[in-house]
Image 1 (cartoon, helix red, strand yellow):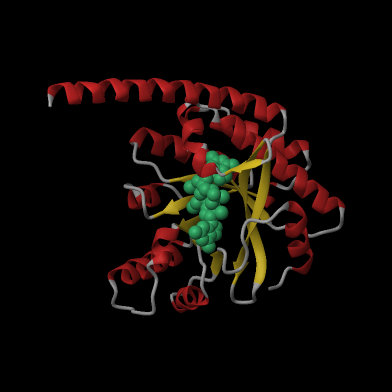
Image 2 (cartoon, helix red, strand yellow):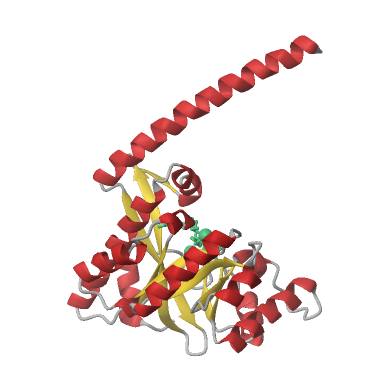
Length: 279
Ligand code: C2E
Ligand code: CA
Ligand code: CA
Ligand code: CA
């Protein structure tokens, strides 16, 4: 048994070594990929269900690596660890502003687009100024940009977040808390930070049924009511079925993002949505 476990240890180490090399190659690839414009942005519509209109969108990044599409689920975490994510987030913000500029120039009436900003930015004193510089470079009204950040556990980070939210508000941007409900400090954060939007994580939506007594539904209903009382806009993510949409409407949640309406769309497809506006 001893020699067996020793062999295992050796294999394990080799594995780790291999992973480290892979990891480094991956990060080098990233630096080249930014220069080669391999990242692109899709836009997923957000729909106001009371009148079935497009009222917003979320920018979601994709990586075209030699013709093979890589999804953020396969690189965002690594980029966060290596502190590469901030460069990518600014890249996505810039691409979003460029697209907004072109829609405006073509006479379309754009909607507010939200851009994901990793919590890895929380150490950056210049975050708000950097955002302003990019948005102003394209002459985009600040109210057309929303910043999505996730909840955080760390008290220090909550304070940083508070500073950013104030800075962003002062400059006319809106702020959304992403994946609301699955973190550890949701309520503490809400108590301290006046965000504009809560995005309910799709984990809650997946469990959604018409049964008002079901635990998951009770919690969801109360999150929605709480947001309403706090004057915070609430968006349900990951809505895939009409049943989910109807149940959300019953719970007074009227803002929806999900495959039920649209998947994340290429710029051209999204443009068509922008000119039609209604579903
Ligand atoms: P997220 O911010 O929670 O974005 C929503 C994710 O749910 C997206 O996955 C979207 O395609 C997916 N989705 C939308 N509707 C549905 C639905 O009806 N059903 C299901 N099953 N999924 C749906 P995506 O695009 O693969 O992005 C995954 C995550 O990667 C995002 O989750 C976000 O955390 C991160 N991400 C994406 N783009 C960026 C970025 O530019 N910067 C940073 N920092 N993170 C990003
Ligand atoms: Ca998001
Ligand atoms: Ca989310
Ligand atoms: Ca997220």
